[in-house]
Every structure is written in structure tokens, then in C-alpha cells.
Length: 489
Image 1: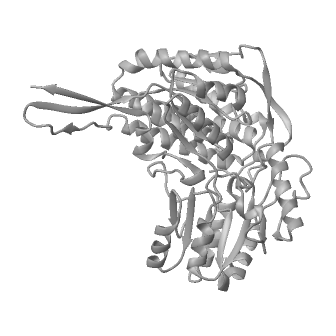
Image 2: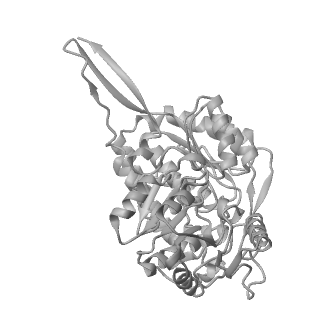
Image 3: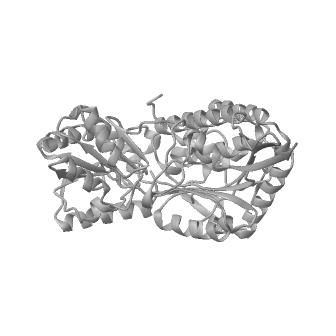
């Protein structure tokens, strides 16, 4: 993966600005647009169509027609072959998609390239599973034959966040396609470009028109209309707890199944017998990767007292080496995605200083970067357990450390918040680590590693961190309904 610098000139072709509905680019029905901003320069990239209820209605109806037409008549194996073709086409065009992603959200190009390759793997995994989702026979006795059929739920809505725009589209759209569903995507207004380009690519490789549609716009306009549309039969959302609750309530009104991945304030527990260099190295990626804009980041470090100081010194030594700059410069960290997110993180840091928390490293904009939404990698400790810094999701390059003495205290701190997305344990004693992992209230628990897993491993939260699971075979089952067929002989 190249570390070379890039420029806008490396991006071949025009920026996608229109909705993609029923196999064609469309301007917003009302003619309105919104600006998507390069967070590295604070300059406008494109004026993108601003969707509303009329645009959503067109997209959903197109998806409904497709779900009853050519797409429905394809065999699962044929759907899989089209999806493999899509992955190959995306891989061949990886640099263009990576540059679009970097311009839109600011991450280094090498990270965006890695994201695109991950999307290709996601599509291929689901493509290979398309013809392997099986029903069952039910033993009712010799006078009957009874069996189940798995059928696509129909039109599915995908409301995706801005931190991994293309990756999050693929995480839910790929299993929906494998199941035989059609999709309407509402990308985050901060990062619509790769979703729009992806829908166009789906059309180019031969997916029937209307199978994948994208309506850009704001959540309260396009997103709300999409969730409420009567033809939508399944909803997937990744985002904030507050918005997730609203979507879940609206989905319940229409008796629509919903999969929600919401916030996280994830504890990385480092016990006294841990490999500290391994843990500190993982915490760099866990806390600062993608500038901390990761739902499953290791933003909360729970450190046993006897190793806390040594661990923090190791972590700071690694973090000081991270180079921060524009995404096209292809360094270690890019900017935050927007001014809104930048201001939010700065407000948390200011409140932390007022509360008496200690900023061991970072805590502000790098001095050499006068423009762009940059914040240096930040490490904070000496913070009270009731402080917002340890209780709320900051979503920036900020690691907050708490000290504990006993394993029981670590368990209580880890489980003491409303979140339950992921947790981690570092210890050379695997029995001790497994015992603690069993008691941690989280959808995923990682031992002696962070970001363990892949497209095969189900992921999702409990408590305020969401409901349902994505990835793996459970990710496809979200988009299948069970029909029982009984025959009297």
C-alpha cells in the first residue's frame, strides 16, 4: 500500500453530485443542493443533490419494481456471480474510490485504499454465501411434508454514517443483495460521494436498474422519509444513540425489522500481567486510527495501577510519532470529518481541562496546521469516574485512562456505562482473561488484540449500543424472512 502523496489531479473523472435512482443520475426533485466539504482544506468539493420525500419515493418505488422483476427471477448463484463481478470492478477502480473517500472524509489515502479492499472482501464473502442460505424440513409425521423457505424481505433502507462511508454501505447492502433484496441508501450528508459512485458501478456491471439506489441528503428529510415509507420492509442504521432511538420507534410504527449499531465507549482493560508493548501498540490503532472516529475505538483505557504509568509512557511514545496532515499527504492521521465534529471534540477537551483532568499529550490543533479540522492525538488521565470524558463517546483522537486495583473493580468500571459495543482484555493469563470476558457486557470481546475479526465475524451491540448483528451469515439472515410450507400427503 503506497505511502506516496496525492493531489486532486490524481482523481480521474468528475465528482458524483446527483442521486442515483432507477439506474440513472437524477437531480433533487426540488432542485436543492448541499455542499460536501474537504475537511483537510475546509473548501467545498461538490454541490450534491439534496433529497427529500419525493426523491425517496421515487427510489423506493424503483427498488420495489426491481424486487418484483428481473432481480427476483435470478437464481441465488446468478446473484452471486453479479456480486463477484461488482467486487472485481471495484478492485480495478480502487484508487478512484479511495481518492473520493479521502477528499470527502479526510483520511489518509492508504487507509482509504485499505477500506476499498475491505469492501471488495465484504462483497465477495456475501456473494459466495448467496446460494448457501438453506431452509429446513420439519418432522410433522408420516402424513405430512413440512419445510421452510427463505425469502428476501423486499426493499431495504440503509442509513449509513460518515466515518467509513463506502465500507458501511457494503456492510449492509452486500448481504441484502445476497439475500435477493433491493436497496435504497441514504449516505451521511458529510460523505455522500463514494455511495453515489458505488451505485453507478452496480449499474455498470449489470445489476438490474433499481436494485441499488442512493438518495443523498439530510437525516431529518431524506432519512426520515425513507424509514417511514410503507414499501420499505427492513432498516439498517449506524449512528448515534439518539437518532437510533428515533429510527427504532418509527420502524416499530410500521412493524419493520431494524438493525441498529449505535455508540460505544469501549473499555480496553490492561491487567498487571499483560504484554504492555503489545497493548500500547494496539491502543494506538484502537484509539487514534481514523482520527478516533470509530464506533469500536479503544477510547477508554482501564489500567491496573501497577502498570498504568509504564503503559501510558509507552502509549505516549508511540503517539508522539504519529504524523497528522491532509488526507492526500498520506500520513498517519487526517482531520476530523467536519467543523461540527471538530467543535464537538474541542468542547470535550475544554470541559476536561476545566474539570481538572490531566492532558498528558496533545489536546489541541497541531501548530503547523492552520486550516482543516485537525486535532493531535490526545491522552488524558487523572479523570474522575463521573466525568463526561470517560462516560460519553467523544469520537475523536482522544484516549482517556482510568486506574483500577482489582479485577472486580475493572469489571464494574467496564460495565458501568449504558454502552455495550465492544470490550478488550489484555493478560498473559488466558483463563483470567476469559473469565473476565464472560462477565463483560458487550457484543464483542477481544483478548490480547483490538479490531479482531473480519467480514465473517458477527458484530453489534447490546444495551444502548444497538440491536441485531451484522457481518457473517447472521448479516444475511437480517434480510431473509421464513415461510413455512405444509403439505398433507
